[in-house]
Length: 382
Image (cartoon, rainbow, N blue to C red; front, side, top):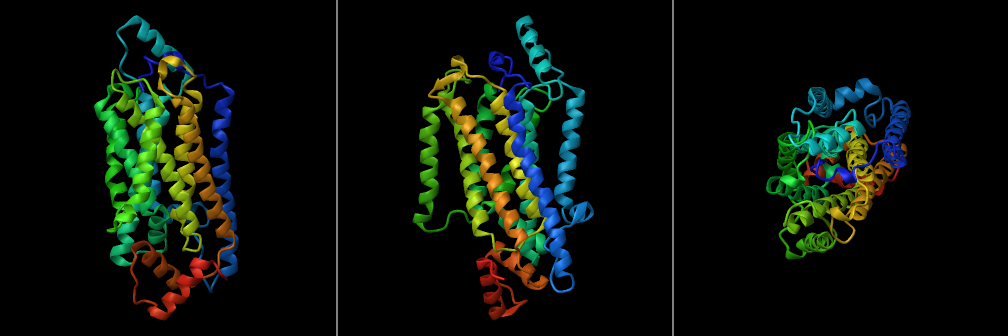
């Protein structure tokens, strides 16, 4: 959002909420560290008789998550470059210039709170692009242990809801200059990253809605509930365009619905194959949504001039916090099952990963072996 016009609502980074906003990120990092240790023990126990559960140590992570690591490093380098250059646009109005300098003093490293939202968009792109790449690899060539498991970790329903949220964000950014981000990572760069994430999400969302009419009911229900709630609780950023403000709130609520669907997908996938890339996805999603939560917790204070209807700021804070909680729950479930994961031969688990993600069977292990091992994976029996 335009930081100059809402500077009165700007919060301070030194507020207590800032420290609380980092707590979920620390928890997610602890989950990832604990999982590495548990998988290292599992590899030692299964050496020679079963496939290693996932990557062990930084060397293995880098070797098995090359697309993700390369994408994250490139995005981090690009963000660091633009932040080093700083903001080249200086407001001509003295009052706006003074307000902008105040914002930059409160955010000395990021320039403005809007950078948090821009970083989230940059982090989203390599995650969805990598999952789409692995989905295509698993479906076309049988893939590897990481390909099917990582693509299936997303699921079509969460991707479809995330796609709807992305489309809403892009529409708001293109139609309303008042909702565009300020700072070095804002403007056209942020819009470009939001647009670039839509095609991969579209690829992941294929099959979310079946041919039967009743399969549309859950999505129609979610969209109707989100539309009603966002209209009743919207900001007042766009001049004489309350529908755009409502669409902005709807994008955040759709992200919450996507997080809930992701948790449900994780529950359904608990017995499935595991991979280093899918584990990395479970860790990075709470980090990604944590940026939004941190933004809404510290960037704005309650200000009647920002409210178009209802209590949008409270709703956005609750929604963003719920997203982090849901993704953390999914990561915790993933970790818990990894610690008790059964030892399934490598070929069986690799074929199960590819088949469960693509919805087809292969002839590598035969019909009888397929039924036996997929039932064992689904039930999580040992």
